[in-house]
Structures are given as structure tokens and as C-alpha cells.
Length: 384
Image (cartoon, rainbow, N blue to C red):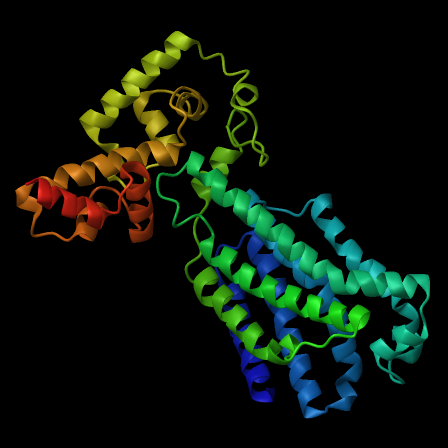
């Protein structure tokens, strides 16, 4: 595993160089930089352990404290600042450093007086004091808890953007969601195995931590290649969620009546807006643009994003994503009925109708028609 650890360390340095030389960096880039640096330090520490470099024992021990206490909080802060479009850290962000301070306080006696004499595990067994034990439990639980919290944020984000985008593939942070699930599973499996061994004297037939270098390298690749080289742009999204009257002011879902209480939109105005909106959709087919969003459509029909969202959510009981894709599905069905389009594949027709993802098209088609596109075509051939 020494070679894999060193390869991972080199990969971390390469990703860091890409981040440092990036021309326009935001706060989330700097947080990601620290996150990658932390993983790189861990990989170098693992290589030192495998090689038996005893002179670096102090470095690897302190590095482990930083790694386990900051890994989860840094990922959470990266997700949070990315979604908020933050330009500077807030006091709330700095609170996430508290676990590290508590652990260093609890481990202070070991770090200052015993680090070169015995391992941390032996010291904790021999010194069951309150501060040491408190530091230990925070040490092992903080990153798994923060990874779960980061997943909650990402899940809410993926649900939330359907109110603004008609195609969510470029902004749903799916790459981060899935690599976070994978790495979170590694942390939780390791935590469960440790708890089973400690409290029930049960040992799993394998040790997940023995694969740490491989898992970290895979995680770095996911963050580096998918996350950095193909990182989505959130400018419109951030401008939208910062609008005072935006329907997405709060991450927490709210009842429709509470959300639009101050909009001032009357029932008559809502009915007129629905007619105007549907006429515009039929006449101009803006849904053919895969980048269509709530802001651009609201401007086109001469209303605000807030009022348009209210009409869609309350009167039509649809999200913006659902409303636009209903038109795209009808466009696909219309083109499939046109014999001049027989030369085109189903996917090509879907993309020409405004979809930008095959999976989104298939899911949306089935939701709207109750059948897959293939079944729809078979039924259509039988009816002819």
C-alpha cells in the first residue's frame, strides 16, 4: 500500500496545483483546497507508517487528529459555501472548528508528554479521564456525523433546484453527492466495526481501514476530475436564491400559503398569468432550450420569478422542472408521430425537444405517460 499512498499524495499535489492556478477562485475553492490538502497529508502519513519512518511519528499522529476532526467539517463547509455562493466565511462556518479544539484539549496531555512513548490508543486505555474520553468520542464521531449532514444538504439542494431549472444535470452536484455517499459509507462501516470490536468483542472478517489508501485515491480522483474539471456554474442559481422575494429563501420546505403570503397576487391575476404563460409556451416553444430557467421564462412573460413560481406551485401544483418537461414530453410524442422524423433516434428527438440527459428523459416520460418510451413506440406501432 506504500506505493498507492505515494501515488495518492502526488495526485493530491497535482489537484492542489490546479486549484491554486485557477484564475477566478471563490471561497468554496479555498475550502476544497484545504480539504484536498488534508487528504494529501493523510496519504503521506500512511506512506510514512508503511515505510516505518519513526522520525515522522509525531507528524503522523498530529496529522491524524487534524484529519479525523476536520475531514467532515471541511466537506460540510465546502458543500455549504458552494450552495450559498459565499464570498467570505461567517462566524457560523468557524464554529465547525470547535471539534478540533475540543479534541486537542482532551489529547493535550498525550500530545505534550507521552506522544513519543506510547500510542494514542494505549494512552486512552490507561487514562480514562473525562476530557480524554470526551476528546476520543468526538475524534471518532465528528467526521461521520458531518458527512451525513453534508448529504442532507446535498439532498435538499437536489430537491430545491427543480423550482428553478428545467434541466438539473449541470447543477445538481450529482458527482459530489455520489462520491460523498461512497466515502461516508467507508467512514460508517469503519465506525461500526470499531464499535462492534470495542463493546461486543466482535471482529469483522476484513478491516475497511486496510483499504484506506485505495479509497482515498479513488475519492481524490472523483473530486479532482469530476468536481474540479467539470465543476458547474451557479451564478444564476445564486442570484435567484438571494432575491428577497424568492421562493427558495429558506432551505426548509414551507407550506405554499405561508411561502407566498406577501406576494399580493390575486386569483384573477393568477388566472391571467396562467393563460399568458401557456400561450407563450405554445407559440414560442421556449422549452426547446435546454438551459431554460425560471428567471428567463419570467422575464419573457413579463412577470417576476416569485409570481411565476406561485402560479406553478399553487394553481398548477407543479414545480418548474415538471411544468417545462411536460411540454418537452408532448414535443417528443408529436415528433414521433411525424413520419419525417423516422430517420432520427429516440435519443436525438429527446435532445432536440429540450432534454439534455437520457436518464432524465426516460424518467420524465414514464412519469408523464405511465410507460417507457420503448413501450410507447410499440403501442403506437400496434395502433397503426
